[in-house]
Image 1 (cartoon, helix red, strand yellow):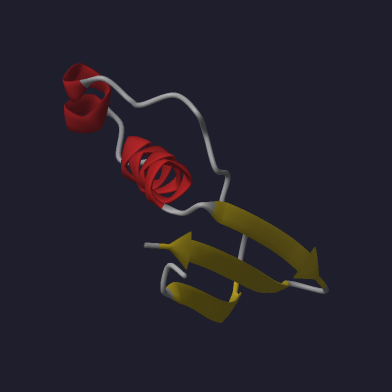
Image 2: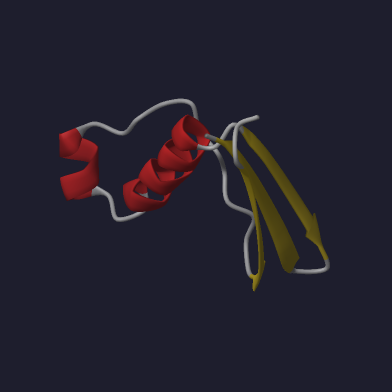
Length: 67
């Protein structure tokens, strides 16, 4: 049986968008918000399952990894 890891993160703020598109190097240099897009892309790439919920400005991000 493969080891499992579940990570729960709660934070105040905007919900993170988990994009399937990687920003280009040019976008990363020219647009600071592209770093958030890159973070969402990396989360989507490395986690086996992702769940994001937002309620009243409080966000919950659950990551599931199977190794």
